[in-house]
Image (tube, rainbow, N blue to C red; front, side):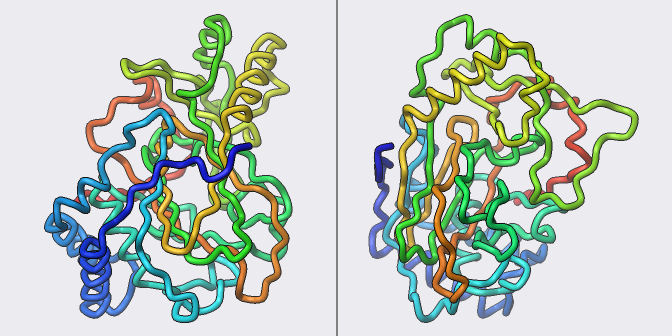
Length: 330
């Protein structure tokens, strides 16, 4: 698996100063990073005034890699405090970074949150947590976090995913693979474009529930657009054993191709990885958590891009397993 193969967009010192000073002022005015309506409105108005150089660096993904790294923002390893033991105890740790991430997210589209995940927060803390080491969630550590589309189960999933690195002393890599780089024959692509299997909610959604009186919706793994293929992929939560043999074989070939083109990106503190969630599946290599306050720590924000048409119209009829997205309509 190649390492470090991600396009870099370097933020100029003036842009860094503008982002950090704007976040600090908002934090001073509101006293908390909790995304209250009035704070979101302030972020929206502040993001609209960001210099054009920042907005240019936040432009859409423009290569088949399907991702890029924004670099140049500083992180004070001592100032942010120890890595939280779990998202539920993180509170407002490194709150300035919550606001920086929301400013960037708002420059790209509409930030979203989920009622059933991390108490509806717009910025999530991704840290290893005791007792969750073997799960297929961001709280795991000792297992490979399988490549997946973020929130693949839901029709309202994000178009973009932002991962900001607070701490990564051991260079634990995020994995990523773009559908635009795989090679599939026409028969496999056609088969995977049919709605054969559902994708179920992952374990991070404690309150997820099935749609009363209905079956889980069957969804395609691939979708062709005028710009090329997109995908909706989460094998850890897809009941592949229920599919016909030819479909499973095609899915296996897709998995092998995603593995072939996968890259491993070891984020540095201050890096913000921007992933196009329609093109790229992401995961994480295994690591051994120490639980001593120095473990890997990321912050995550999700973004919908207004007007983007990259998904089948049939998704509008899905029930989303009872999960509601909270959208910052700014």
